[in-house]
Image (tube, rainbow, N blue to C red; front, side):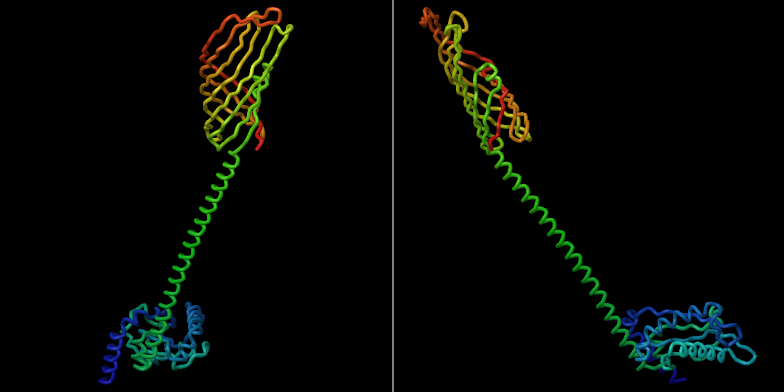
Length: 375
């Protein structure tokens, strides 16, 4: 009795000392095997015993190497066994434990040394629900191994649990590290994709700006169809400095006589213009125009011959016809100043009738101009 108490005390001290390690060991699993009341025979295909036996044999097979090395044990306990006319409850519990161990040894290829088995347990120990059952726990706890197999065996199990706990911790840390590395790689990949997308967008923007600038530097020829409609040939040229600014020069010239030179319509005119294009597509514009020229009109008995100059503000819109052609609608408002002589024609000779000066405020130019974009 004294020796038994010493063994229990050593086991308790060992358990308290190694409690942190025990807390880290894998959770054990319990398997219940049921017996017919007052019978010590083990019937496998009865009351779920076959299912429990199959599950237990599978888990033992996976850990056979540790069992053979003494790093794991199988705990077998029988509680509150019912007695019969031949066997006491303690003897019944002992035989039932051996029945289960024999079944596992036979089917699982195990040895007696792999078990820690409770000795006879008084029938008053267990509760009613544990009566007529054998409980197998795997893996057996360190304290159970120390109690039954001894301190040295318990230390071997304890060291294995430490090693396995460390391995599990290393695996956990490795998984966490892999997850962090994966997240970091995904973050870097996302940032790289965003940088590449920004670089691509910037490249496209610069290319578009370059193309727009290249397109903005254009030269076009112009013909005012309204002037041509009045038999006044009109041609011009425009140089687009950029998408916003254009410089134009238009010129007109005509000289017509009829009725034996008694009637005359002659004119030359030059009109430089600066424009500022507005709108998203840069088709509308505002600008300033200057005009200078001379004229000789004799459409009745009195003719007028002199010079003109003036200027004003212009505005309009260019309608795109196709890639090369536009139609330019324009109107200029301002002032024209004219100095001219009046004359009549007698026997083919011009006779001066006086001199006049006149200022005109209002429309000074209008155009429906065909524009041909050369480049």
